[in-house]
Length: 104
Image (tube, rainbow, N blue to C red):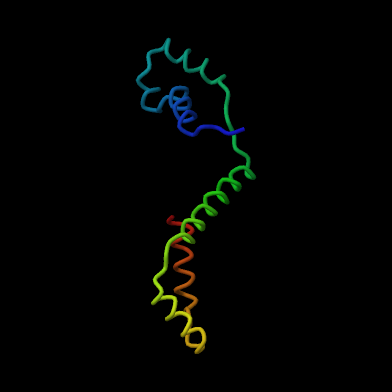
């Protein structure tokens, strides 16, 4: 089953008032809030969350693969690899991975 995130957010925002709004409620309004606690809830399993993450990552990789790379850059990399002069420092690699995975 697919859930439209925008529709789910609208339903959630109507069903769950903010803590500030709860403090401003009159006594009879608290009864209404108590009745709203018996609404349906949606919980996404760990496997479902992981599946969403994988889909997002695969889309990101696919979009990166479709970006054109200049022929000059490719020739420079090819030459450096053939001459065994191409080296990526592990700290630069780790930093790039952390930026990509945690800040994207």
